[in-house]
Length: 289
Ligand code: AMP
Image (cartoon, rainbow, N blue to C red; front, side, top):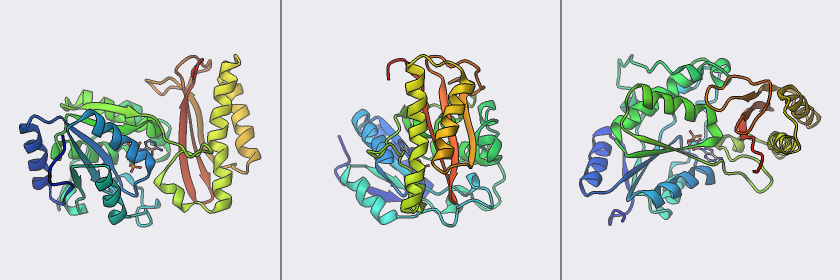
């Protein structure tokens, strides 16, 4: 069942909260898809999943300043609200919450979430304030939009762990669902940042997913040494002209600690720069993909 009035777009926390509570009073299960906009099929897959699980779907669109470092791309980040709303309307979304920055960070606000231990490595090491910003905005969104379930993408694997731990540690009354990474036909993981890539850079960026597929195939063929898997992946990346690898890690799926021996369920994660654009991707190693 969906709101008979179609898509409601709200900018204030009070209106957003009221809309979610009123859907719940009607007995509807509410799904939330937090995004920074510039929506692509990856985001839309989360929306479709919420639509199939829940009677009411809310999407937030907010480019969260506190998860960007001063030298990062906050100002340049793509903002395409009208196109986003058209896509969400077509999918039958009930509510879009698109607040201004001051709505989420009232003047004088100084309270932040201290992120869990899993935030310390990988992205957290390279982007020291990033997960503090992510955890803070996600908790705020959960307060404003008290949904029953929230949907996140596996593409940002470490982020999903940060959120799961935060929800558990801070007793947030919400279920977390993680959905598979959506890719282009040639393997490139969809990302709002892909619009920054020139045609030549996009071609080079394909080495990221290619190296992950290679790791998966080597694993199926019996390769277990994490060092050797990383060595082979690095060769693929470097041969494609991607020498700027921020990290390449084979880790335990729960702790994110590096493992020496790959086994079923370990996660391989990459962050690499393609020109000025920083891309991340990952895969879970499985005997039978
Ligand atoms: P963002 O707008 O980049 O903050 O992403 C919003 C949500 O969409 C996050 O939960 C992301 O993990 C998810 N997402 C981004 N790209 C993809 C993708 N290619 N496939 C699936 N989910 C994605």
